Length: 477
Image (cartoon, rainbow, N blue to C red):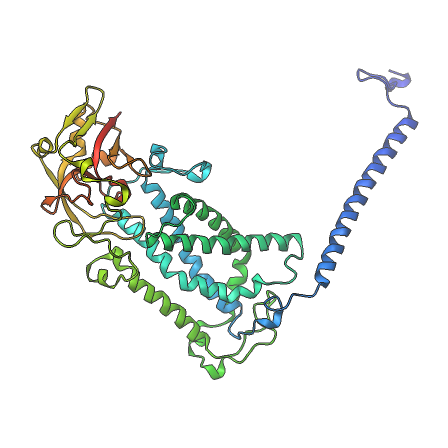
């Protein structure tokens, strides 16, 4: 301590810097900070200058010119009406799509879930139930039918905002650039998901890879862009919907159809042409298109007399009449299964902790038989009515394997190796009394296309997981 009890400038940390040195340090720091600020300012100025030069570049001819788009119907209100329908429908599509993903029981491993590198996107929250037995038929039927029905609405929405896709300049600010990027992902994702889904419904497999994988990842990209877009536009959509009365628009004839007031988003054309259709007519055309698609699609899932109206359902998939005369997806010939695979030499092998048990079909038929009335429902959206299956309960086969409380079973087909030639079923599927290794359907032997000599049938199970041409069951604890 110095005189008077004051510190003398020295302590455990060493001596202080001299006043002159401290000044020089502060000076260097100040000059460095100023240089950084100047650099940032200079960079921002260069960006602003570049943006200014881009803005001054004349718009290319054609669609990039504001006068190119002249429909007097375009405007925030009509766009928001279509957007509201999609705002309701797309989340339903996403949820039912994720339920379809869950129905494959992806938590059982790569045999059931062949999506590579899914990470957190492949979260799995629950075991797919077997009650009610028509659950998958309902959820996938809604997913496919709604996806088809929304196509006219999606096209109308894209038509209503197409001037925005040709904005000039393409990017004005960083925020504007991010919004444009989200729009690109939204439009591209929507087109990709709807196009691949419709091709899959028609069993037209032209994808550069697995439809399952492509549609899965595409759905996540699309829903992320959709949520971002909703967050950016929900307020504007709400204000636009409140700006005009739907009832009044439906009563407005062609002579009284007027453009909407100019809007900051530029949807309303600066020089609109005379109207050739009312907004009422536009809504009726889109709604009529959706209704028509509902009529020619929904019957493949609903069944009954509506099945005859399902003109968009895949055709040539019903193998004649009789007990086996109901729809199939892939024939035995299409996947390489021949009568030689399932002839007299066919055996069913049941594996458990003990010795493997081997059965001929005649020996299986000599065991107690059980029946279940269950449909076949597939990811493409089609389903059959309830068919009457008979065979051996999976829970009884588990007991024969020495694991009466089996937690899972690996089902393997004689089908040559490929996707879905084997599947894992979990505990609740094994022990549902309606889960069968079916040997008969509707009182007759299974046909070869329907899985002779034995196939799996499980309530609420996707059709592809009701494995056909079964030759091995491996029960596990």
